[in-house]
Amino acid sequence: MTNSKPWLWLLVASLALNVFLGVAVGTHFFRGPKGPPGRKT
Figure 1 (cartoon, rainbow, N blue to C red):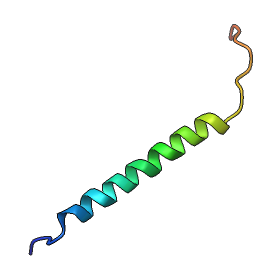
Figure 2 (figure 1 turned 120 degrees about the vertical axis):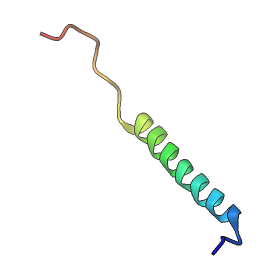
Figure 3 (figure 1 turned 30 degrees about the vertical axis):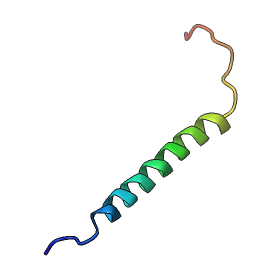
Figure 4 (figure 1 turned 90 degrees about the horizontal axis):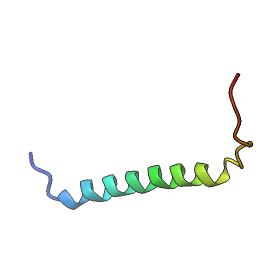
């Protein structure tokens, strides 16, 4: 049994990658500012 629509797998992989990158970038921007740099004691 062969897949008659190989582009479907490419579409699903592209969608998954876009969702992953969107979440990664979104959490980076909406995480809030970091505190001032300092020494850890």
